[in-house]
Image (tube, rainbow, N blue to C red; front, side, top):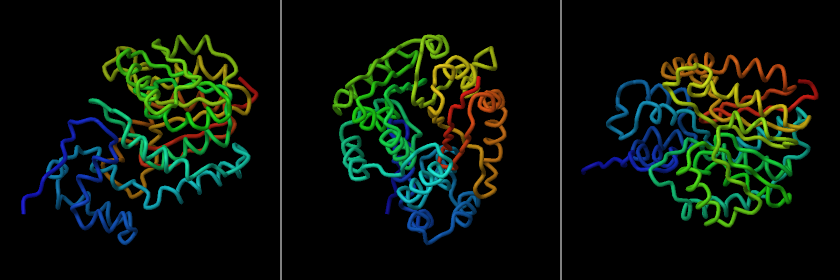
Length: 307
């Protein structure tokens, strides 16, 4: 039998590429069914039995498969319960049936073009739930890319009668975001801003919810603008506009090694260095810090009345 691998040069969600590439391996299938422990699956990933190139995945995608939750619904429920206990949200109830309907619509309608997204299903569900629970009147998305984050928040924002501002400096990705939200009927109350998120943050006022997923050039001369280090200067101008009690959700907060994975040890060390300034900023402006080891890592923070 000839085994084929997916073409990872095509755009789309990383979780789809990972699942298509690894579903032919019994170890992956057993892990996803909850029959093989995360530790044992991670040991298989690191054993060299199968190399990432043999699966058609890169090193990052191959190793990220070991961080997938077995049950994304149950995983999200636990996060919501913890956020409720911390006083960040007042309820854990959200329309889960509507999330399933939206997921099906996104799978068939959302056009990724050449772009990949590393927003995983449990992260999409968490954002969908938070947008419904928080009922934000004003939401901003610094680093909105081509709209895949925003699509999960918009049903809750629209239901609350709120508005959203997508902010990205790239004109072509912003146009794709606009096209996708319009195709899904989720463009009500949306502004599309193609400007530098740091500068635009100075113009903002009275924000209820901020969803942060920006990324600076990896070769930027200024280290504060390089890759994910850009979180700090963006929030230096944006946090002042978030009302006390408002919520910041930050993506790519991969700071916990779930299985002593050697690959993630290096990545986490790099993340900790890049986020040093951001964490200092959070200490100054936010009174609740909750970081969850989702596949790519998500941080949820509550704005204090200081700063």
